[in-house]
Image (cartoon, rainbow, N blue to C red):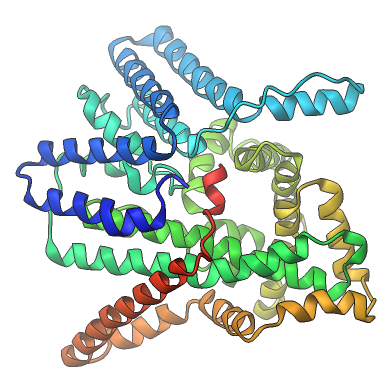
Length: 469
């Protein structure tokens, strides 16, 4: 990972936050955050920090060019910007995939370039594009101060795994924000919650998911396939929502407010509802910058269906240079179309919920699989693997440790909005009760932090899944 968890928690974050508290003036504070962000990225990517700097300069100049020129030249600048950003993303992320596909189709033997993927390139490229597109649309003024663009794109809390922050959401915050102790406290608490999701839940689920997906498909039975699928479903949710919580918490510490990226997606009752709740920053990015420009739902039902398939093809491809991700995206897009044509939205709530969970769970098998053949094979075993001899059951039984079963139950419960309902009840209580609950939440966060440190000391940490994207 870019920063080891121990270095980040014990050295980097305390030093940066301490200096941020002491330094006067927003510009000096911004300068500190820029230096800290570049050091953060360079720690793991010393060469590719130059690529990120190139991206910031390029998009800054394109923004200024669009602001200066009107008419056709303005559109040319936008097209060139999109081509340059997507070209850079394609070069570093998709060349191997293209060569492999050509080799497979034409039985060729072209060598793979093997270009190393810069961490977080999909995130900072999309952020940069959103800024230039917003300038073109007149939604924001072109930023004349390059350092603000550099801070926007490189800001370390969400640099490498999101959420994707749109420029118009934080434009004013970069020059006008307050440093408040209360917000720092809330940010630290949110950060610890996110870290706990990752270390205490996601990492435990990862052990079971890796074990099941590491089996040969022919050796799996129904229970092994479902154990792997459910474990990975919880792993990826707590991994990615945990990182988003950490990023949002870090933003609060430094006076920034980022949009929520997850709203209990496993409580969805349709696939459309799921995508309103899952990776919200990406789904809204594609809605604003791809779906609506394609025509959205304004050009008839057939065109709407085509537009949705294009968006979900792009969503899958954004996640990784493998056809498994593309098929996963189209799989979700296909069910969205079904919901347009069939009365699935009118199902009783419990049936709609079960339907959505089943589709999402099966889809994540394709997302996790190394190859399409493996993904299809595991899905087949989920519904046909009726084999319960000792050889088939032993791998499953080995995973059913007390720790796994406890974390599985906790993970399932917390994936539903129980805390939201509890907070609603607390809001109706007296000030004394509210203060008591607030203090208890901070005490609980300290306990969670201690548990995370003990777990990290035990060497059970593994990198965030979305660092690969």
